[in-house]
Length: 136
Ligand SMILES: CSCC[C@H](NC=O)C(=O)O
Image 1 (cartoon, rainbow, N blue to C red):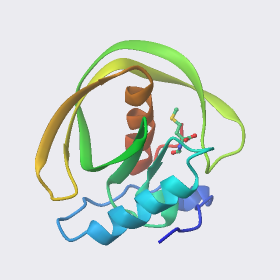
Image 2: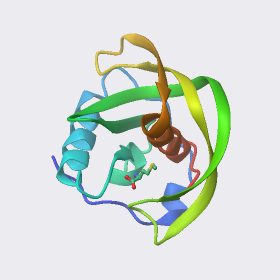
Image 3: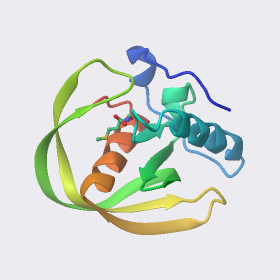
């Protein structure tokens, strides 16, 4: 189900709880909402649809990849950049890493580990920050 986007910065500043195996319906809502906003949004965290669970969804070309409990286990090559966010006005400067390695669970709660670079890595870092209550 497509959900409204949360813009309440107090709510968005709170840390999200770990996701569990039974969170499939939340994953579905997050994917539906990202798909509905795909022209103006490249990634989303569950708290952006009002659910404080550590679940993100990231546009990767034509598909949207959901990640549950994502953790960056390695990062390298920091750079400065500017980002915007559907939940915020304007753009802000931030530091991101060119290459990251992420451990996460897929929608079936299977353990995954993957290396990402560039734009995809940047989106993942932005969404994991959301899970920690960090807004750019
Ligand atoms: C560079 S990452 C930007 C991600 C942002 N989505 C919000 O969480 C968006 O504008 O889609």
